Length: 438
Ligand SMILES: Cc1cc2nc3c(=O)[nH]c(=O)nc-3n(C[C@H](O)[C@H](O)[C@H](O)COP(=O)(O)OP(=O)(O)OC[C@H]3O[C@@H](n4cnc5c(N)ncnc54)[C@H](O)[C@@H]3O)c2cc1C
Picture (cartoon, rainbow, N blue to C red):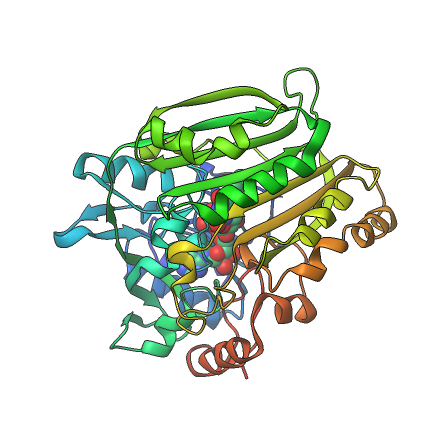
């Protein structure tokens, strides 16, 4: 019997093959379109468990899709599309239950009437699943930490097809691994998060011309290091994308507080002569999130990321070097510190908690550029990484054991492999960054 027929029999009305809109939706991710043998769209944890057992019985690989913004398209095997597991409910004391296939824009909208918010990423369409098991560097990272720091419990389908609850007291090692170890340990059907009560935000953009990028970087560092946890910001240097998007350095910022306070905190940046536009106004938390572009842009890019323990002059100078590699280059710095840094390095698999910032750089090449062109350019972007530790898995699009060894500290990787051996010895679940059992 084919895998699609088995799934149709064992998960009735939830299994889809080529030709159906559900199949097309399940096989399409931000990075492209795959050709799995079947897509299952379960509506309960038990249906997820049945889909897992059926795929395992047939020896078929499983790909898990929440928002579809972190995985590569798959060929063959079964896609378990969690998009129907999108219920969001607010309980007592700001505890929020969210289905593993919900989207962050919907979470923000559901929490707003309760005066609550959850830090996630900066994009509405990104899934709760990929961020909930991967990290979550979002608008409140300095105020409340990573998204994974706010997970209090998960309902998870294991490789054996059992539905279990994991929290600090029950299956604590599985709970630890699922908060940063990615999709390697099970399928989270429900997260319980601790949301935060939020007040008024003021935020917006400051744009600059590129006459003195070094001065902007140094002023942003001075603001970041001196500011309270309530100020969150991202500094980007973007290449021009035609007359509509002229590019250049730009700051996105949000403060829980008043505009007067924000302007005072940003003064070292606002008083630079290169400022071309200041647009700051009261904003609701949900409106800080942006919509994702419809798909991956039509060029190739190469680059990397890392956590920056110290925004030293040397590191900032190396950022300027990376911007001068002779190809359009996009650089991002997100302020960390604050609540992110108050989490113990071994409390989650993401260990690099002493970071003052998160850094990412990508150089762009035309769609027909060769792998050799990309590799040559990648080498030229190395300078800043002399000053960074680790990498953030969810933004890392280089793969393999050597990359895994930079994403996780050695003790964390060893611990993740032990958890994997206990809960998924047959290697059923392979996250975007695959962790093999010990
Ligand atoms: C436009 C864009 C903007 C982004 N912005 C940010 C940002 O601001 N901050 C940030 O931190 N990251 C950001 N990211 C990166 C993002 O965190 C990852 O791409 C993340 O994996 C996306 O989650 P998803 O559910 O949409 O992806 P999916 O492709 O659905 O899932 C990614 C992987 O996560 C695993 N997974 C998903 N759901 C579950 C689940 N319920 N249980 C177990 N495993 C699961 C699977 O292994 C899957 O392969 C951005 C990405 C994009 C494309």
